[in-house]
Image 1 (cartoon, rainbow, N blue to C red):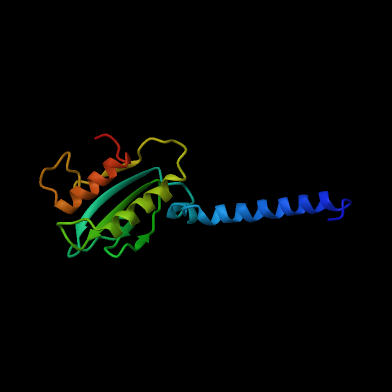
Image 2: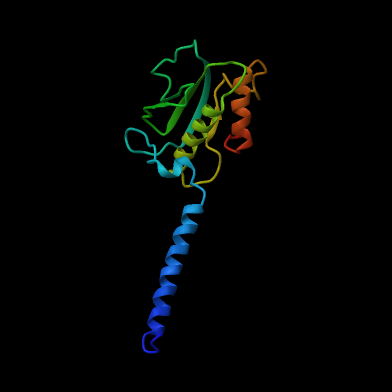
Length: 159
């Protein structure tokens, strides 16, 4: 190797290997949570959602459009039309016995997306009367599982 260009070749090889190594490490990194890639959900007037009240309904119980701003369907799709600082979210379940993993992931992604707009770290979710097992012993098993999931994730406000 020519002594005049040896240092240049070493520096170029070092830069190329570091660039390739950084690219490989980025490819191996696990994907970020789903809510970090989505646009921030806000109310129609542009204000952030400060409080979410989660309700539960069986698939046979149609939601009243005026009462809820967001509906989470059994297949994980979300119909969102919030209009103020408080959002009522209705979780419609196919089975009263089991809260599905698809809905659990969709609900946590929705709440994670909503929490991006909050400046404080305190819990911002409350349970409606149809799923609050702390105040009502006769809630359905799927509603209880959903509420316990939110409690395990430390998303629930104290009663």
